[in-house]
Length: 100
Image 1 (spheres, rainbow, N blue to C red):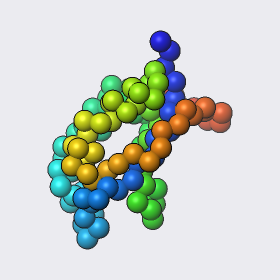
Image 2 (cartoon, one colour; image 1 turned 180 degrees about the vertical axis):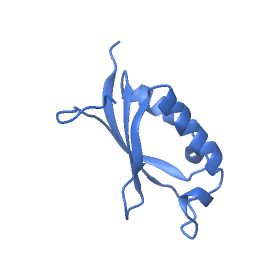
Image 3 (cartoon, rainbow, N blue to C red; image 1 turned 30 degrees about the vertical axis):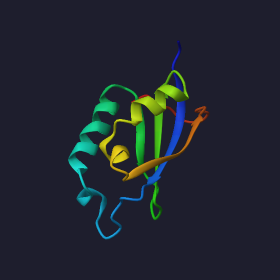
């Protein structure tokens, strides 16, 4: 099955500690390593927080929405309630390029 692009919006979950920066949240290293692994696999193409919000945008490549959900679910921040999914939508790149 051909892979498509998806836009994923995650937000901080109930266990996020607003008194601490992102890099000082519980299990930061585990989350960072997990996300870096997804990027190295070519699943996550782009990602980062929206400045001044509680939300994060990911652009991923997957066969379908179910694959997106399955690949993101084991993230320790999702498991521990630091992040939760708001939205997963098919996304069409119309301007620019994801090529280096």
